[in-house]
Image (cartoon, rainbow, N blue to C red; front, top):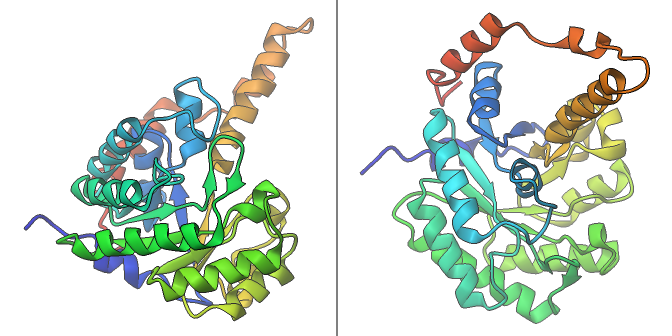
Length: 280
């Protein structure tokens, strides 16, 4: 059997001692993040959509996303977890097939959302739970260890409130999910409430106002994993925007380009990222 990155990835999930799931969007960003100390990599549906010139949520097909995920798996020795949106289908059977294909792609983990693209309306409660139950069954049928994260995204999209989000997370845990994720609550206090309400490792998002918090803050709240979503990609796009506005504007200012990294340093990081140990 090929190397199974799942057990090492699962072992990283320690409530109160979170690791950073570094979300990459291409092979170069994956290898640089690996070289700079990432312990595991994640895909980002939004960040990858941006590389294709498309908007977030529902604009990348399952085949495209799984091919992208498989490429990231091959880019470094690190475990990779994929953002697979709603599982690319409404029916539990469609979600189960996506999980099966994720296993074949060599992934160590994946996440499934409970909202429908592109508008973000939530699946009815019972269907949302059944979809996770089907995903869990498919993950357990995988010949390798596959860490399944169940997401309650309705707070972020405005489909339901925090109480309903926690109710869903608890039901997802009962259905067998390995980890849980409710993106974009209002505060770190709400993150702590989420962690205290469930008996599974919780992922939190370092984006928006949460970038003002440190890893220690997330640890104190009980978080097991901190993901970046598309935040790192958006920071890169901010530099593109700022530099372009400066140099293409009336002032013709090329100053923002002075913040670039030297080519030799990038070359060294790309090479190191292909060799980094998955146990690091």
